[in-house]
Image (cartoon, rainbow, N blue to C red; front, side, top):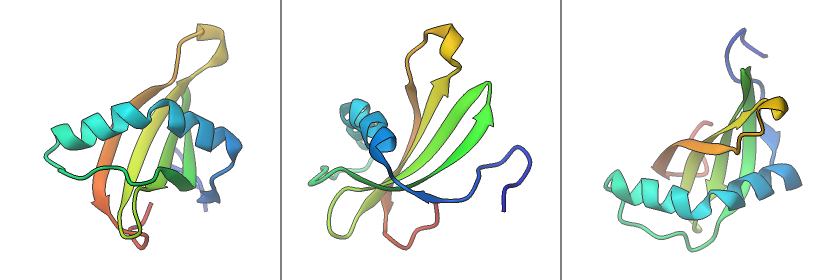
Length: 101
């Protein structure tokens, strides 16, 4: 159920989400390491995502980074008329497949 102002239901990652995440892969690794996480991305496979409509769209994406590790990415996509690029606004490393999105 969608909560007013909150993120919607979880969906399987599609090609748009995979492309969006790939644009921010290096930046995501850098943010994770700057937060004290000392891992590497053995793989980088978006699994599922949620969206939140704001003045644009926030995407909260669960990405598989190894057999036992996942990271959550929050990516902001501005409204199209702004011609602004997407931005990685936060990362949460050290999660598992069971960690809620």
